[in-house]
Amino acid sequence: MLTIPPITWLTWLGIVSVVAALTILYSRRINLRWLPSLVLVTVVASGTLAGLYLIRSYVRPTPATVTVSGPMLTELTGTHLRLRGTVTPAQSRVTVVVRSETDQRWWVQSVVSAENDGSGAGRWAIDAVIGSAQEGNDENFQIVALASADSFAFNLITGRFLFKGNTLRNMPQWQQSEPIVVRRVYGER
Image (cartoon, rainbow, N blue to C red):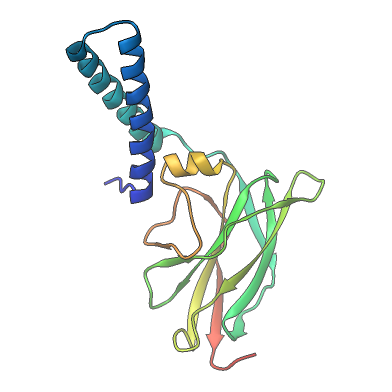
């Protein structure tokens, strides 16, 4: 089953409303009567909604490649880890998702735009939160970098957008790095 986030539904509602309003204005401008105008608006709005659903279902993301270059730790004390890496194409947006071995949800960290390094690749860095002071001690955490070469608007329309603090049960259709596993040991740095 294809789950559509509420913000994507709201975006679709806004697009359909604008298309419906423009259709009414145009139909009135050409002196179409009200009943045919309403039928036309219903058909156009339904077609727009169906088109948005088809775009979400079948249009694949623009390919991107993301890697994590550091740090390569196996153990971490504390709750913060600065990750860095590369992404191509350079204008891609990157985030990191983190999940503990006892939690089925992926926690989205900051979403950043990569900085072009002149070689066609982009460099990125993100401060990831690994657990909290009370939770996550002596647990393994899986960390995956995600990249999207598509625009924010396209990701919003297709339901593939990510915001810091989102929790995910399934990975979105963003490109993924190889997972990293870090064990968080008790104590602060």
